[in-house]
Amino acid sequence: MNTLLTLVFAVVSSCPSDLEMTAHNALEKIEAVQVASLSATVSYFRTDPILDRREIRTGRVLFRKNDGGEREAAIIFDTLIIGKRKEKKLKHYIFSGRWMAEVDHDKKQFIKRELVDPRKEAIDPFELGSGPIPLPIGQSKDSVLKKFSVELIDRPLEGALSKLGENVVGLRLTPRSQNDWESIDLFYDSELWLPVGVQTIEQDGTKRVSRLTNIQVDMLSDEDAKLLNIQTPDPKEWSIDIQVLGSTKP
Image 1 (cartoon, helix red, strand yellow):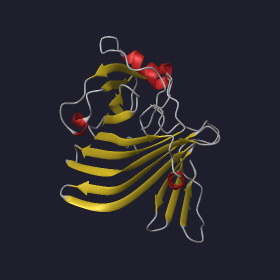
Image 2: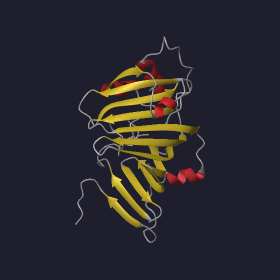
Image 3: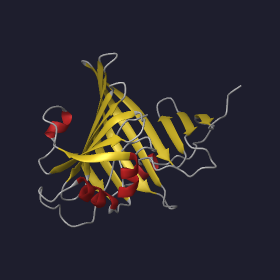
Image 4: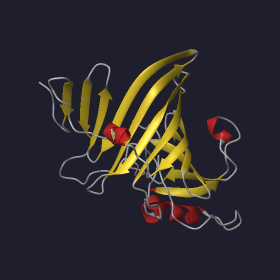
């Protein structure tokens, strides 16, 4: 899932003027990010050029560093709009280390999939080129430039991201080698360097746009923390499906 969506907080000086700002400056500010947890409202738009279909989901994004220093994330969508049809539809995804979980609260179903071989290091869910959510949080400038060419871009003139404020800095990331994405556009608040928008275009033309609002830093509630818990629930009450990488079901 390339849904895309993300989180960051910078304790750095204010943004230099437009004349001084470069893509490298922006990446250095992203690298300086320090945040323990974050929550935000997300609006997500997916356009499928093959089916000529557009869907909109709304919900929340949660992020934290766990006690072991690993980054964990959850996406909780609660509304789905396709065409003129709108429905309440809860989708809850959790990303933690090697694992992703899909939780269906209504049906009491818990599906946990291993994303990374246990002999390899756990992944950062937001790491560009590796994680399932394409947006760096404190990722080093060098690691980004190793995988992508980066340039400054303007705020879009149409679409969901055209509603972003004027004080945003946009970056276009183009993969240096064959990749699922044709390009990734990232937009940050230019004073606090909070992510406010992301647009990905895949090789088949599929476009995904996410806009973040109501961002709260280091204020994660106990209820939100529970939504980041990837521990397997009680099998007496839930239907459990654990899918280990490389295993096959009988």
